[in-house]
Image 1 (tube, helix red, strand yellow):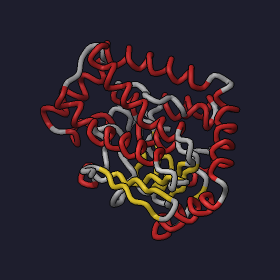
Image 2 (cartoon, one colour):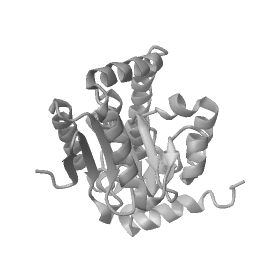
Image 3 (cartoon, helix red, strand yellow):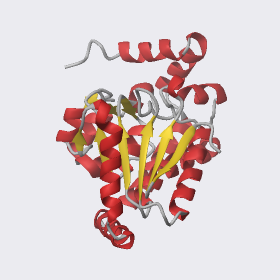
Image 4 (cartoon, rainbow, N blue to C red):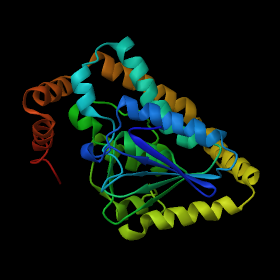
Length: 272
């Protein structure tokens, strides 16, 4: 049914697995469509009472697929609008889903993937998991500006404005990005156990309680702020940035690995 993700039912729990391990499970347009289709199926299935999202291999996901963007070369606001709309809507499915969502994270969980994990109700990570929002380092904006709502503005500004991309699992738990850390070999089992424990409870009670908790945050203007941040990102991407142009030009000429090395080298002498 799906090519880039897996969808399985384990009793009352559905598990979505991002399956592009050769690309660190980078989320391209086709994968995002499949995630949305899987979430449609999960939400329509009365037997499913909780949802897990995880990544195949040694990674959750490196984020949105820069290689696809490099090849397609989108330019201008109207070209970028449907791209960013999809990049925004799919991660937010996990926030809006009436059933509880759990991210099980090992390895890299960066940029758009970090935002997806933050949109989940719970996030469980292995000790080797690391998180971050490196977008500004290569001239891109933040698609789903949910981080300030999770960790507060001071910490969010530090992470986003410095392009921090190696937030350890321990640090992520300390600042409220994740709920718990478990041994890597136990990650899938623990995530499933948590989901199964929730699934025992009356599903309508869980649904309405999740809605009440989300509403307590949304009442402070979260959804409107996220939409405004998306419009700002649309201007950033539509107008283009010299840093982004230089990064993409180098990626096309010498490959993405060289472009990432160039990006990181710009900051090596300024690290505190």
